[in-house]
Amino acid sequence: MSVQPPPPGYVAVDPSRDQLSARREIRAALRHPLEIFCLVMAILVSLLILGSAIADVVGAIRERRAPGTYSLLFVLAPLVLWFMRGQLMARLRVNSVKVTPTQYPEAYTMVAEAAAHFGLKRVPDAYVVLGNGMINAAASGHGFRRFIFIYSDLFEVGGRLRNPDALRFIVAHEVGHIAAGHTSYWRWLSIFASNWVPLIGPVLSRSQEYTADNFGYAHCPQGSATAMATLAAGKYLNSSVDINAVADRAEQEKGFFVWTVNAAASHPVLAWRAHALRDRSAPGRLLWRPREPKALALPPSAPQLPQPGPRPGA
Image (cartoon, rainbow, N blue to C red):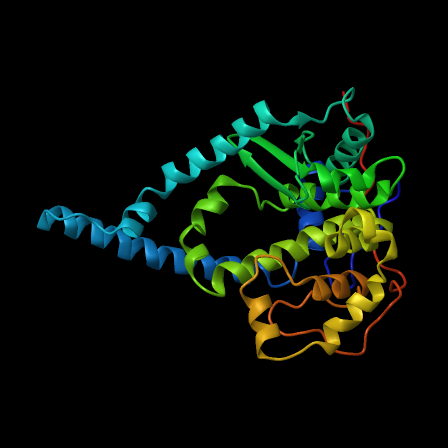
């Protein structure tokens, strides 16, 4: 499977580097240009909140009073986060269907191929979770293990009678989160407190989603439209959705409340996200709506990601 080019303006990938260097190059090539800035801001805000929380807890001990609930939560964040991630992994291991070479082998191949193309040292675990109508997928980790999970209603989109490329894009998006470092415990811990701050936490999350979309598009661009159509209308109506019309509305829909809906969201609003996947001449917008002109075609002479070598046991 050939890997498609990233948008222009990103760092080109040098295929002559070894696997570790190639992974760094891939991260740089596909990362949203404002993600690191947003990450630094989130870390600084978290440090300020943590300092205030520590001061409150120390003061409470000296004054023999109960510390604030949030202050205690932020001080105990390393344990709280470690426990939450461990619980998530345990629930997946005992309550979901694990994707293996014998259980959903086509999906396992998709995960293995995405991991190889993005330079991961091992294939992440993958699970199918009962969706009950919910269309969602996510990536996380615990300890040295990384994993993705896809809700069954979204996983069905990749079935043999539907669109396997859409599932391939979704898998690459989630594996992209892992390859970009979004699932690291230390990263989650460093931004833990910022998740309670308006704009700071959500804008970082949106930049990470655009980054993961870049990974998905670089791996399987032909699956991006159906994946977005599925997020818009579900697994039954996705084939009838004009995703270009959805993307067009990113430039047309405006106003204060439209802005606030996107600003408070963990993921870019769908119209903006579809627009960013269609117009590869610029990165996705974080706070301000996309504007004309839009480029509907891939730019010429864009660099290619390196092709992975053979992976033992994959």
